[in-house]
Image 1 (cartoon, rainbow, N blue to C red):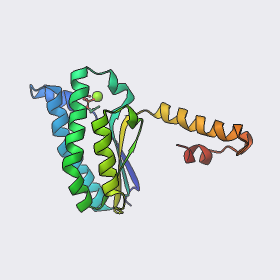
Image 2 (image 1 turned 180 degrees about the horizontal axis):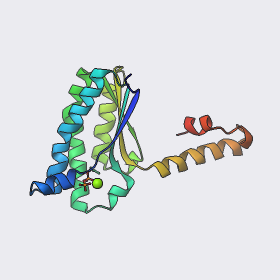
Image 3 (image 1 turned 180 degrees about the vertical axis):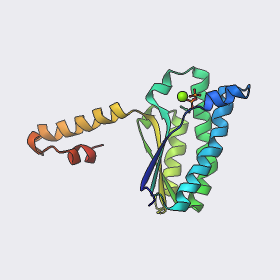
Length: 166
Ligand code: IPE
Ligand code: MG
């Protein structure tokens, strides 16, 4: 059986580069190859959703140089890979507070999502400026708003309600 949804927490890029006597960013650059392999592999075997935890809210605390390099890498990678995504019928989506990302990054993402929105084979979800806690916070606010407006009653809130508001 093929999983419907696979999520990958990327880690160890910096350590991998350090072992090779290179800068951390060298690890991030090389990780793109792994991302490409995993994405194409998943699409090929029939996985429907692939989530890549690419940049967490905590990652903003890294040195500015590394954060900037990661943003640059994100911009250039999206631009380069959109064509391959289309060829492989992969739709691009994001989760997280993408409004925190540099304007240029948001633009590239928007363009790539627009161009790939009708692709049906697999959905690639990039978690960017993402945190599980902030996702729960946002869902809670949305549900609280509905309770306030009498759209739902507190006793009717189920696990599904929470899931639907994530
Ligand atoms: C994962 O690798 C990539 C990102 C979080 C952007 P790390 O950058 O966490 O590399 P290590 O874990 O420090 O080696
Ligand atoms: Mg790490």
